[in-house]
Length: 88
Image (cartoon, rainbow, N blue to C red):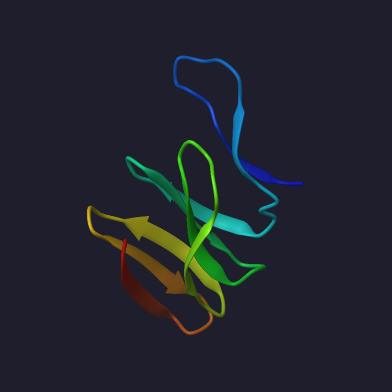
């Protein structure tokens, strides 16, 4: 199974943040979470950087790009060409 993993910049062991994510096409990280789009599940989601439960933030027909700022998550739907904004 595919997974999202972390590795400290100083080195060490690779640690799984979340497992069984076969459809991830884009991701971005902020101070607390890893945000990603999963095209197979048709969702925008996040998981704590230390690992834990995946929280689905939104559903989209064909989620593609993703970005975050201090207060919002932005993502696009490649099928409709729509850009979405959602509070973190």
